[in-house]
Length: 477
Image: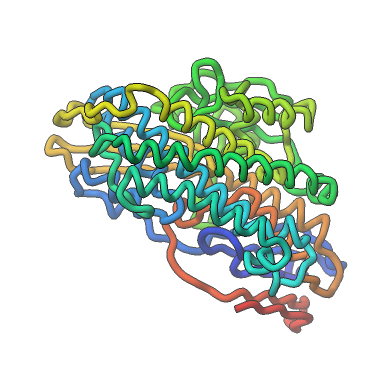
């Protein structure tokens, strides 16, 4: 950093899950020269787990995050399945999938309606005091209520299957702890039509407002990267199981049929001094050329189809946005809505399977391997849990690669792109800074997952001259 530069700090970034800050380095003309997205909190679950019995891991891992505990349950339980060297019963497989789909719906609903809809409905330049779910409810009660109902729909399924909405312990090594009852199945099926209607009308609303955000679409993380996600054998969309696929910015497949259990062969992690969040990259391309994105945008870029009627129709339209892969991170919002539609349709398919009520839902065994890897698609992207145990079944080593870590390099580059375009001059404007935050919200980072962070901080932004003089200041409690 040059001594004559001005540093602009956004601390913390608001309306995301977790706590972070952004620093923008300005030159004397007030133009952005450099930008960093800093994850400022650290707890480190990997070390906390050492010495614990492996069968405790799913329940322990669920406590990493209150927003997406099911994703950690699934990835952790799959790693433990590998340690047991068992194949879980087919019904348990389907029930885990339903559990994960419900998690995606409620998490995507939180991201879109509660965190990002203030920007989409009220505009990027809206009064910060109004840019929240209460401001949304005031201007569009129907939209706010739909968001609440859709998130409730997902949470209620998690509660019905797992016994509680947050940190359920229903998914266990070898399967699930208890079967699905007729009453619970029918209750979920009755709720599906209303949830589907909400997803469809929200998707139509979003498509109707996209024209207002042409400038944001052009500058919100709109650059070439790789994209990575898990796909089924037919290269269809999946959240639970499959092979990794990597495509480049042209849509060309550069990595296909990659085994998730061998993730360390093609995914590297780099530590930067300015963040507790590791930066992942695709090893065959090196660092930083191997920058890639995961999550809803990436999944729709790597998948050839969804596998459900309404979602497939929307996916075909989504692919028409760009002849190559869809590059702008603004389209994460669009992709989330298509995935919600898919999840609801897919749950109906799974719940209609005659074997879904089978009582055989768990395979029991003792450890038969000393190392296991579990992978799945969390709402924000690909998630890996990797464990090593001793002969007594105690955890000796653990590594977690979280979706937000996969996206770290792309998020930093996105912040720089947005800041260079929108932030200029010697005076601050809330709309400028909100756009810098909003591009991070596109990725919906979960910093509690990525570094397992806790805490609460106020927002304070200062613009300081090269001589140390405070030129402008904004605060938010």
